[in-house]
Amino acid sequence: MKRFFLWMVFLAAGCGGTVELPPAEPVTLEVWKAMPPESKFEAATLERLKAGEPRLQKEAEWARFTRTVLIPARKKEFPKGLPRT
Picture 1 (cartoon, rainbow, N blue to C red):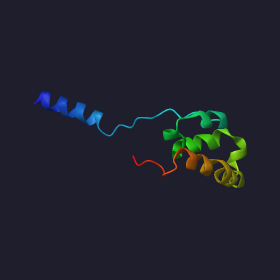
Picture 2 (spheres, rainbow, N blue to C red):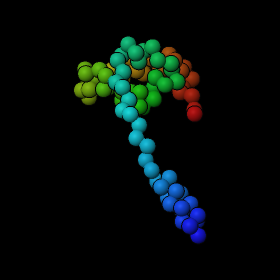
Picture 3 (cartoon, rainbow, N blue to C red):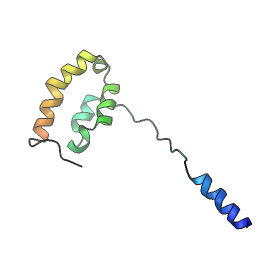
């Protein structure tokens, strides 16, 4: 019975725990341009880019960047659309 109780304690202690990931480092435009295409257009990467480039934090500048840089780069890297994962 004591073993069963200890087993339940160990099981309960291991379940439901959260793992905290370190915050991702901001990315500059130069670093973003050099990234592999598979990760360059991920939402998390784009958020890191916004955090790393102060001028892109304004909504109007982000929209302009999206139209003039992001969409053309994505079309060039993936002419048939983004690959499905």
